Image 1 (cartoon, rainbow, N blue to C red):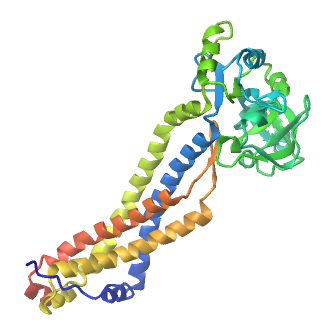
Image 2 (cartoon, rainbow, N blue to C red; image 1 turned 45 degrees about the vertical axis):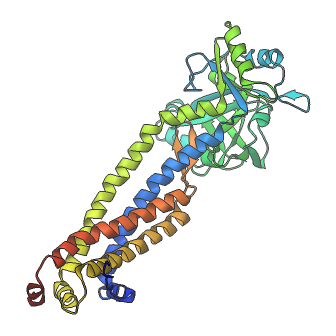
Image 3 (cartoon, rainbow, N blue to C red; image 1 turned 90 degrees about the vertical axis):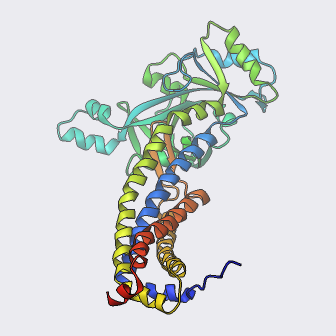
Length: 401
C-alpha cells in the first residue's frame, strides 16, 4: 500500500505570500509582463486569422486577373468582365432584379489630412511631394452591387459617396490612420482633395480599415482602364460554372476562386509575420521568466532553515516541494489574471494596420488561456531551482544555515 503524503496546509502557502510584499509585487509584476506578452502575441495571431476568414465568404466567387491570385492590388481585368459574367452564368444571386455581381478596384494610395499637408507646404514641401510621402491607405472602388456581396458592411453615419464626386466613406480603422479625420474632413488622396461624407463599419474584417470611393472616381484618379476583380454571389450557381467561365473566356485572361479561398491564401502569406510576432514575444518573455526564477530563488533560498524545520517536524520533502510550488504558482497566476484583465480593457479590439487594411487584436478565450498557462508555467519553473537548493541540504545543515 502506497503511504499517503502528509501535505502542508493550503493557507500556510498563502500566508507566506504576505511575508514580503516587495517580493510578492516583483513576482506578480514579472508574471504579469510575461503573460501580457504571450496574450498580446496570441491576440495578434487570432485577430489576423479571424479578420481574413470573416472577410472572404464561401458563398462568393472571386474573379481576378491571371497571375494575381494572391494580390488584388496587382490584378487587372477588363471592365466588361462583370457584365459578361452576369450574362453568361445562370443561377447567380439576384436581389430586387439586380445581379449580385460587383466590379471593384482595390489600390493602395497615399493619403494625408488636408490641413497637415498645407502645414507641410508652408514649411517648404510641395503638396505633390507631401502626398507622395504620405503613408498608403487601401481604397476600394465600388458600385451599389458591392452591398449585395459584402453583407458585413453597414453605414453608421452620413451617406455613401455620389457618383463622380470627390467624396469617400471611411471605416473606423481607416480613420485611425489619419489623426483628426471625421465626417466633413477633407483628405488628400494621390494629390486630390476628397471629403469624408460617411462612416461605415465592417467589424472583424479587413474592410474595417479601408476607404471606399465610387468605382468611376477611382478609375479617374488612378487613370486605370481596368478593374481589380469581380465579386459574385453564387446563389444557386456552382463554383464549377464560374471556373468554366474563366477557362472558356481566354480573351478576358481571368482566373476564379472562392472568396474564402483567396483570403485563406492571404492568411498563409502572412503566416511568417504571425510566427515572427509569437517568437519575438517568447524571446522577450524569456527575460521575464529568468527574472522570476531569480526572484523566487532569492526568496526561497533565505528560507532554508524554515524548510529544515518543516522536515524535522515530519513533513516529507515532496510535501514541502508541493507547498513551495503552490506558493509560487498562486503568485504568478495572480499576475497572469491581472494581465488578462488589463488586456481585456486595453488591448481587445485595438486596430493593427497592415497592407490589406486593418484587423483588431482579439482577446478571446484562447488568448486568455494561453496567458494563464504562461503564468502557471512560470510559477512551476520559477520554484524548481529554489526547491532543489532548499531540499538538497541535510536537515542538520539546513537548521544551522
